[in-house]
Amino acid sequence: MDREGLVRDAATVSSAEDLASLLRRLRRRQARMRKTRVATYRDLATRTGWSRGIIGAYFTGKVLPSVDKLDELARQLDATPTELGALATARDRVDELRPAPRQLPGDVPAFTGRAAALAVLDAQPGRGPAVISSVGGAAGMGKTALAVHWAHRAATRFPDGQLYADLRGSGRRPVPPGEVLRGFLTALGAPASQLSAGLDVQAGLYRSLLAERRVMVLLDDACDAGQVRPLLPGTPGGLALVTSRSRLNSLVALENARLIVLDRLDEAQSQHLLAARLGARRLAADPAGAAAIVSACAGLPNYLAYAAANAAAHPELGLRTVAGQLAASRPTAVERRHHAVPVQAF
Ligand SMILES: Nc1ncnc2c1ncn2[C@@H]1O[C@H](COP(=O)(O)OP(=O)(O)O)[C@@H](O)[C@H]1O
Ligand SMILES: [Mg+2]
Image (cartoon, rainbow, N blue to C red; front, top):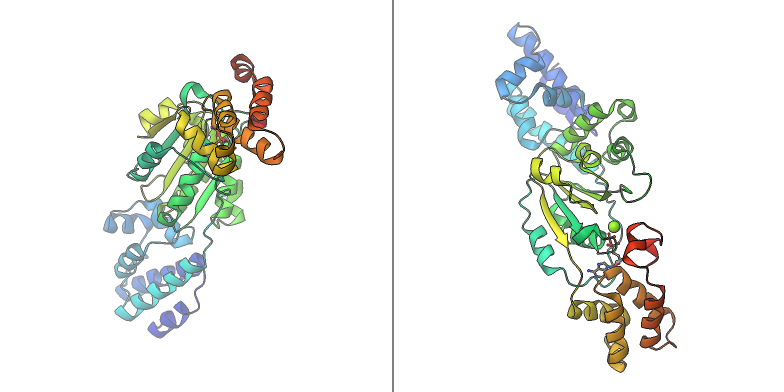
């Protein structure tokens, strides 16, 4: 391969596979020039201190090397300064072309409160996942709302994308992690040929793809740590945010996860939530009715959201009537625990 050849071909690179084929050409040229055998992944692992797996992923185009990694690798393969520049430009082009998934659901309307939890998430050092649970594992406490709201706020810190999956852990059929993995791999641009491998292989590929990117992964409503573990990024560049009715103790113990436990809203926060959804004017016009709703909802955001939706849909009703209906239809704690009443309805 002549030197102009590589620089010329670098100009038409549009995928990680194209870039990998240039790396393989450099490797063959080096062997020819030095009159040695072609460097193996093992040789290059020894020279760079990186794992053989990641070097293999670079050479086959499964993973796009970071700017620094590509530079180091090409130097190891005796690339000239002009070639290094051409490869870096080609890499930037591939980076711009590759998919950056934006899977977050819409932000919660009129999100209120949770300042302490938001501050904890803001301070998340990027090491280990964050787990959002609720006191007593209660549903409707605002776990998903908090996670989605914070994820939108922090999205710019994860420019390579945001992945989202509803794991349906509190339903009867939690989603198997392999199914979620396939969706994530597809969203990250993994070739379809990679999607039939076993769970471990797919999880490895997933971590390799995330290793070079700043991606946030929101795993909503997990049933247990086993469902979550294959879906965690392996390196600190990405962040996993998990919500679960369970506190996922083993994740907290073993994966350095940070646990945030949500409690009921206090009276002022409940008022605030109602005002944000109904408008301060309607509350001010009927403070006793607003107080009755706040009292009937007992600080549960899902009840407050339901009451607000009801009141908004029926402007002719007084707030006290809305509160009365709520109290009448409100399931008992026991019913809630056994899902006798669909919690989503509130
Ligand atoms: N902080 C909040 N501000 C405004 N609305 C909220 C807040 N927390 C929860 N909600 C509303 O309450 C309802 C239940 O919240 P959700 O996050 O689904 O609960 P969980 O995930 O804990 O079961 C949703 O309709 C949501 O919009
Ligand atoms: Mg939820």
